[in-house]
Amino acid sequence: MANSMARSFLQVAATEEVATPLRVVQIEGLVVLKIIKHCKEFSPALVTGQLLGLDVGSVLEVTNCFPFPIQEEDEEIEADGANYQLDMMRCLREVNVDNNTVGWYQSTLLGCFQTVELIETFMNYQENIRRCVCIIYDPSRSNQGALALKALKLSDSFMDLYRNNNFTGEKLREKNLSWVDIFEEIPIKVSNSALVSAFMTELEADTPVTQCDYDRLRLSSGPFLARNVEFLIECMDDLSAEQQKFQYYYRNLTRQQAQQQAWLQKRRDENKARKAAGEEPLPEEDPANPIFKPIPEPSRLESFLVTNRIANYCNQINGVSGQSFNRLYLMKALHDN
Image (cartoon, rainbow, N blue to C red; front, top):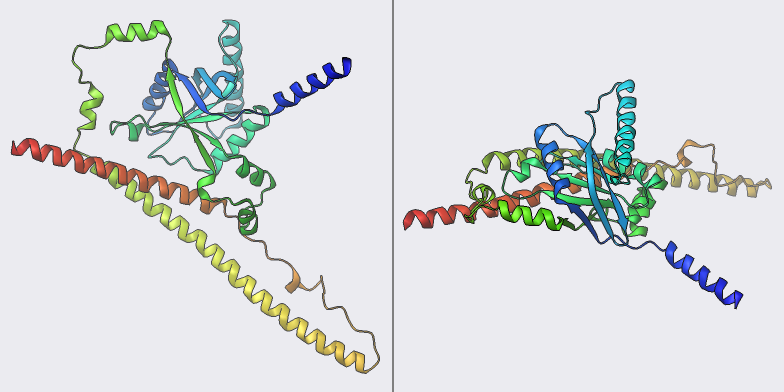
């Protein structure tokens, strides 16, 4: 009986250790409003803040948040920012508010968030928090009539490669990892309590048309498209620079392989002569020779991130252009009538 109880306990413990995959990020409406207010007040400057909540099974609940001070280069100011975070979390704990860190939020400009700094921040959070997310909010995209809010996390396969700092072509092919596998977008569900929902129903205007509906009918999309095209051109230049690095690497690798073959052929001819003279042959590899020193392959991480940004700008241009054509055809039909 004792053995069966022990086995059942071990089985339960083993099953609890298996992490449930994250399916949805549930954010309270007040948290969404806080994030939007903070990001819009300092736009176009980029800001960040802490997310607080609970990790419940496959749902990550975000129940509160607070902004970070504007970061600067001074070390003393950075230390003050860390103390500010600790003081805020201590004050929230004293008033019995959720103070468990579940990630952070940050603003972005035209969806340009795929950076090495974001990945490093993810890895730092992962050291202390098993599951965390980053909420990205884009004020410039929201001005086009859409709530540009998304929750992201790093894929497990990418984190394994990043820990080993090995982004060579061989490892990427072995892991079957491409540029679309760096980030995983988690669905967001906005929830409100019953009292808040009832209060919002009372505040709802009699007219079914809201300001957001008028924003969707705005015909001016030229500035937004122009900035997307400008950033897209810059990313294409960055991608071209990354490709030149790989071309330079492969040229050097081909040159080195040719030098190695010539050296080996010379050494083999020399060994034949030594054998004919009754002498011992020399080794065919010489580690001290610089031509046998392996050339380090450039990391493909930056090119993957640039490709992510290019895809993001292309999707935004495609989406906004399609909506603009629909609005223009709608206005043409109204004008004809």
